[in-house]
Length: 153
Image (cartoon, rainbow, N blue to C red; front, side, top):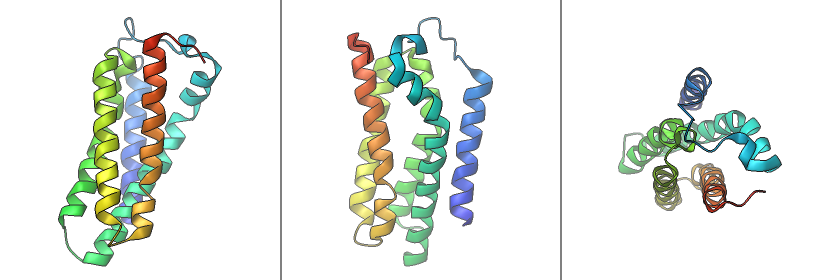
């Protein structure tokens, strides 16, 4: 419970940072008006989705810690994933640098996939809790590619 709550607290702090620092100097960024109705919907639900994702990462960490009783290499991998996700609003920066955001998304998906692969033999539930991170960030990456290419959806 403490692990999940701590992760959710990090998500709340990251969302608060986004709220207070918005729009990240978005004069060069992709505005929400350019994303169409799906982009507007995604922008509306983003804070809530991240709360869910952070709770999953924290719960996965707890399941792993309970199963192993120590800070193992999979635990450090989860910590790295958590830190990458906390940095998500910073490196996406309202899409001022879309290629940097895309590269960071690839890193998040890669670390999350490696974590799922590594944790699966130890805790299948813990591994499954990380799959939504892969799905959400992959969706964000596809959306980012479409926006950069000029597609409106």
